[in-house]
Image (cartoon, rainbow, N blue to C red; front, side):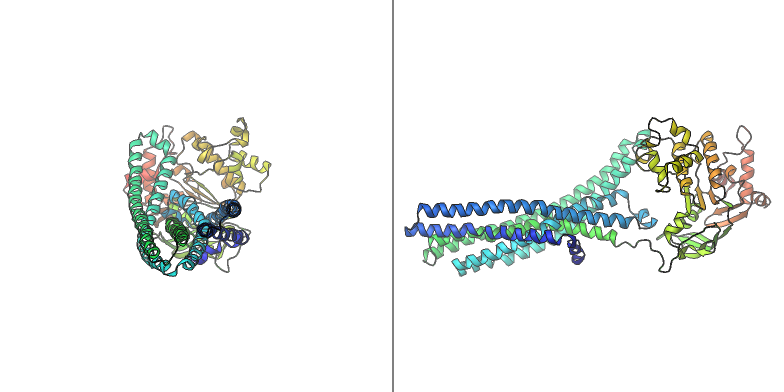
Amino acid sequence: MLKRFIAYYKPHRGMLTLDMLASLVIALVGMVYPIITETMLEAFLDGTQTAKMIITASAIVLALYIIRLFLRYFVQYYGHLIGVGMQAQMRRDLFAHIQKLPFSFYDENETGKIMTRMTSDLFEISELAHHGPENLLISSVTFIAAFIYLCTIDWALTLIIFVCVPILVIVAAYFRKKMRSAFTERRASNAVINASLESSISGIRVTKAYTNQDKETEKFEVGNNAFINACKKAYDAMGKFHSGTSFITDVFNVIILIAGGLFINAGRISIPEYSAFMVSINLFISPINTLIGFMEQYQNGVTGFERFLEIIDTEPERDEPDAIELQGVEGKIEFENVEFSYKDSAEVLHGISLNVEKGQKLALVGPSGGGKTTICHLIPRFYKITGGDIKIDGKSINSLTMNSLRKNIGIVQQDVFLFNGSIRDNILYGRLDATEEDVIEAAKLANIHDWVSTLEHGYDTEIGERGVKLSGGQKQRLSIARVFLKDPSILILDEATSALDNTTEILIQQALDELCKGRTTIVVAHRLSTVRGADKIAVISDGHIAEEGSHEELMQIENGIYQGLYRLGVRNPDKDGSIADIDVNQLSKKAGF
């Protein structure tokens, strides 16, 4: 871990060297004052001290302190810039890495927890990156220099003090171990709070609509109280650490008082030497106290870096070594005895075999939880299949690069995600190098251009976080425009209209029908009206294909699931006699499937 941490210093080697040199000079300047103090006291007792000597000595000390003033500014400013630069690079690496992680990672990690690792954890790491080398160098040099100087005054008195240092180290090491465990727990609880906040803030409109503010407060307090308890443990360990180590350093002063008094009484050292020793002993103890205080920062930084590495070391999505680009796509899709299970869960799909020819529309129907959406997620390799194979134009999706595979697949889902930005930005997400004319054409095909034209800022209109300023139908049409711009050969419609009212659905369906032309399409739908015209319909139940065929073929299956669903729908038509709103989920329950 240390080697990986040090690697982030590499781009800042030059500035780090200057920072360390400045820190070294700062440490050495601190030794001047006790030396001059001893010299002036001896001159005073000898009667050789003059006003010129006092002024000269004071001028030298003042000049050195002025130099130290600028050096401290340099260390503080440029040292922190090194830490910020390292933090930025770690955040860059972390962000780039999470872009490559599979869907399964996000299934198991909440957004708020990931955000904590990218913000507060990395801040603690940057503080360690800056203060770590600086504190270690200054404290080490000061400690060694003070020890050597004290030995020149009286080696025996110095050794008496020095033998107390191992006791301090042992006590510090004991409490440091407890601090590490406590601070790790505090970090984890802080991430829980952030996850709770992210969830509550994102769902604030639902909370207000259902007047469940008290419930959200209750949920928040669970994490908040866990954080308080974790902090109690952390600060208890930290309090014991600081009080214990501070007591030992206080004992140093008592030992010096006793030993120094005895040495003076015995005539072993002079008053000037004892005075210089008393001044210098602070230089000896101060770096020890600095290192003790640094332990807390070290603990925070190490804990943060460990949590950073947890994500960095998570296995990303990878192409096979000999993966090829998917080009000239026709759109034929083959499922060959596909099996799949999510991590640590029972198998979701069992032996799925399907063939969809170029330009055909396959509809997937059946009760919720049967595996329809999972089938859609497997085609672009959002999850890795655990058995069998899926082929595009005869090529296994495992043999293709993921970028080329996904570039040729367009997805329209019920839960539309729009980015905080303008209407143009969200349409352009389908193809970032598209022209303005391409954007407008895509919007026209999605039946949204006329509405956009009525807006004061047109395509530059900001839509808010997740498109909060738009209606459900407007969001859906924007997502359709995005897919039009992408122009994929394969299209997946995952319950794209199930959350819309009838009027809006008609507009959206017109856009979807246009989008489907010339493309191989897989449709997941609850409303039978959207699947009757499909070339092939597959009824998915409990991870199996229960029935397969066209609408007419499935209607011929005596006592079949699809037939039963359809007939229930006919007996429960809309006011106009249509079956546009037949919900497969509800009907399957009525039919007992």
